[in-house]
Length: 621
Image (cartoon, rainbow, N blue to C red; front, top):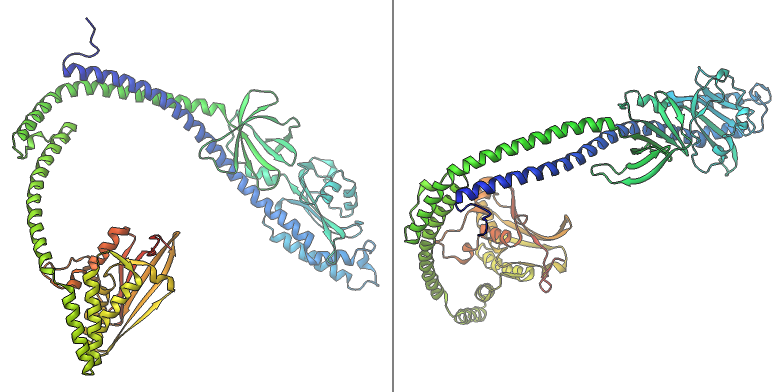
């Protein structure tokens, strides 16, 4: 005899399935939570490091941009170029010669202008020395930090410095890294970042001098004073081709650098951040977070802390254990709850289904409990209610169908009889010389013909405007010529755009009867059609403006949402503004339809917005 996988009773089956499902969910939850927490932990740690590096990078980048801008200003300023051209062939201290009148004024004005720009540069506190010199170093302008050597006549020795030529001859900014200031007093170490750029003649590309800036390494270390660096983490700085380990306010050059093992993609990390696996001096793999400092070749790096990872991992493991305990507890609770609450509700539901099968569709509120089986009971009651409603609705539909058939029979008047009668009236009016009656009769015949033969829901704007013109002609005779209408169509192509049949006429009728007529004076209606482009789509916007009494907000709401009276026998009243608005939104969605803007006693503008659809292609223009 084969052993059964589940007990024979529903109760035993539910208990077995619940216990097995709980154990399985617990195991899956442990695995998924461990993987997700591990991933999120590392991602959050990387994002935290990225945020700290980005904060430093933004500050350093801002200062360096200002300093680089100041350097370029010095190498292109017209006052400095004029000074160098003036003193190019002069001997040292030429301003003391009586034969060179005005040279002292040129030198002092240039120095004042240079010092003014120096003071206006926000990070000028990091400039330990600024030198502007001609090619022979015979005449210079100098601004320097008082802590350094104040001698202005050692600038010529700078040309013998090993970094001078590479910095001067580079086509763009060239970074040598962090070096000791060659001017510093008593040859003590003063780490600086040098910048040397040529100054060219205003009349050509000849180099007539150079500008030298020594930037203190504090431009970086000042922004690292409050940088949170764990004990087992390291901070590095790359300038040009050199890598430095940051130790407080000092830098240790790393000639061997690090070996890149792989590049990683981490979700949530910005485009300017690089995450890589590296090996430092042949050591174990480390995660290195890199952020650019804004200048070409400038980067700041941090090794991801392992200690922080381990501490947070222990917290997550405790959290996972707590989650598993909760799931197991809930599983035990479910076993007892299901055993007690399932049997009775199932019996009542079975009884109710049997009653429905016998034709009893009455509502039984005793099967609507506050749990899942109660939802089934509510569904059964709802089903019973819907069946009763469906049968009643079927009876009403049959009655409405008979009424509709009767209305159709009433409306089946031979249109040819109406056309022939109207044509007879037209020719009689023509013979008697009553041109107004003939013209109005012709317009009425065309209007009735369009109403009688129209079956399509969409027609061209040209056809709808023809209908409006016939309707307005009839109303114009009614008002004795005191009303006028003007049409402004943006382009000929718009006449082929498709519009709902009988959508403009109700708006014109509203403008006449509810806008102009109550005003008691001459009125004008303006019909405009334009193409409106927005959010990558092309829409047709038709505006009808009258200079009547205007509409209040309450009247606007009624016009847009109130259904037409069922008792009205007027065809055009049945196709009212609310009906047109509903048809447009039904076909094209809530973004389209009719909007109304009005000012009491001044104007009313009703605007139709629909997609630009051509007649032949049935797509947007």
